[in-house]
Image (tube, rainbow, N blue to C red; front, side, top):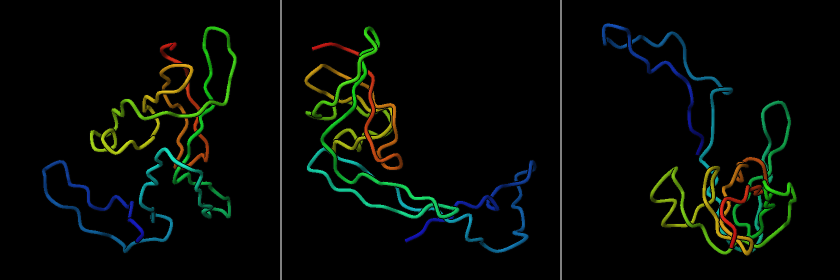
Length: 129
């Protein structure tokens, strides 16, 4: 079900409601977030605005982890989601979003990509194992 991302629900500086000057538009339409979790690879391709395509990761179990000390990047398996400051519920469910802390064989890493929109999990190593 699409979500509407219009902004005619704003209020005036006095606190009164603004009257809608037009109806909804197709370019204000959004969608539900893709909540990527750790598991066997499952992805969906979606059409973006202007005909571009987006790859949405539903489940994924690898991450491209960069060590900032050496500048080296490796593809490693994700063990679990340690922390997700975006949402306490995401932390319990193990949802990977930007800013989530994941545990890998190299150590703990922070996710810097947006898996639900970019189609990949890129992370920077924060603590070595």
